Image 1 (tube, rainbow, N blue to C red):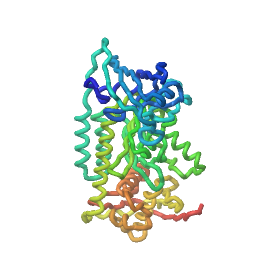
Image 2 (image 1 turned 90 degrees about the horizontal axis):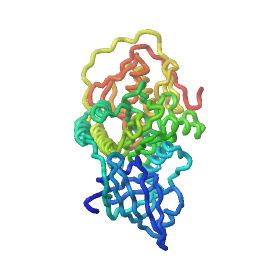
Image 3 (image 1 turned 30 degrees about the vertical axis):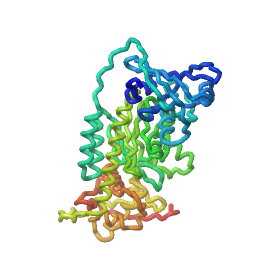
Image 4 (image 1 turned 60 degrees about the horizontal axis):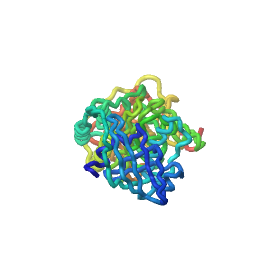
Length: 450
């Protein structure tokens, strides 16, 4: 390969300058066409977008050899790749990455509705040659390895999930200059993701939801692969995905719409990396920007690495939580409740909780809160443990990867934002207390009730 690999020219693959492909029919007739997208696969392979059954497609199926010209978007250096066609993929992680990126390209170039990915054509790179010519110097670009290493080290040293998530988002701001980001956890049973932490938004959006498979976030979780878009693509904006999914289902309560998603209304760059440990997917680390082309391959690699590290840390915390628990220290007695009673309603259909007609939470987190507040109201008990929650079959926790800690973080943060007289306070590893500063009146509304 003349000393060059695909890794060395990765910046040429982002499509800032369209690539051109030359193919040849069996009778020797050449054909040259422009390409919408070239996707990095690995150091020896690339994927080209298959959108139309045109002359290029006909030639490749008959004669699998092609020449690809790429131009560096900054230096102007040109490279020619000698390729051999291997296969076409019409589903899976690579296909989803290219489909999302193509949507951004189509929207940016005014070709929305025209560009539709039919497949990802995989090619073996046989050789890469630099085309002689004048080029501009490549501007210095800071390496993200140092920042990634520092952030990964802090993740590995974390002891509590809430602090780990907040530290990660803070590190993205400080070391990567990423101002808008969030972490969403997967509710595998309900086929949706819910926000547990965010930064850079007017409202935190904790508790907001997006369906699995919708928008950049949902696709990254479903395909278990990083998804990166460099231009605005309306079909991959998650707020729209929530609205359209709920409307299509005909079930207003199918997704949580009372808590607005905290994202940018028109993100021009989006990057979603699945939080994975082995076969377990915990959720998605998501970043976005108002700028075009804000995230490149380096940022994709860095955030994907941090997301995997986060997944391993969460898996370790999960095993630690199952195996150990600190006894609760003696705490000061809380002041007796005062003021007008707060009416807390629980709807059995979806475990949604309303406090004085103000929506709080639903689902597993809602079921947990209802257990806590009933225990408190019936016997003035306010000390609880994660272990007893895991053993409570009435909470209907999934048997695998229920991620109880994430549900408790969600509940604690919703109470902090929405309810001044209720608070959850950590008292030790795997233990917490519920502080109640107003009298409460509990109202149970069973499934099918009004």
